[in-house]
Length: 85
Image 1 (cartoon, rainbow, N blue to C red):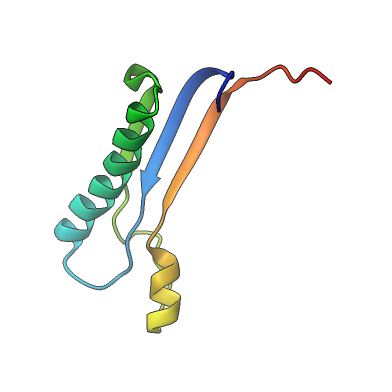
Image 2: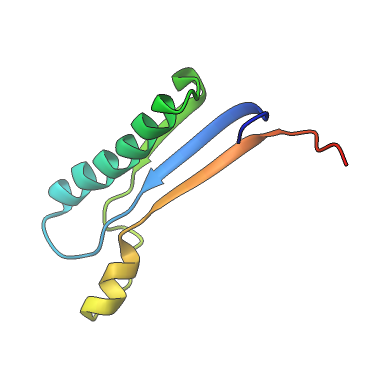
C-alpha cells in the first residue's frame, strides 16, 4: 500500500461457530481491531479505517480443519496507485 492514495479500508473479522454468539461477536471485532492497530503502526491514517465483527454468522465449518478456515479477517482497500514502468 506504500505510495497509494488510500480512500478507505474496510476490515471485517470472522470466527468459527463454536461458543456463544455474544463472545464470538466480541472476538471477531477484536480481530478486526488488531489488524487496524497494526496498519496504524505502519503509517495508515486511522480515520480511513472502519472495522466490523460479524461473529459466527458466516461460519460454515463442521470439522476442526473447516472451523479453522472460518477464523479470518477480510481487508478491503479502496484507493489508487500509479505505477510507473
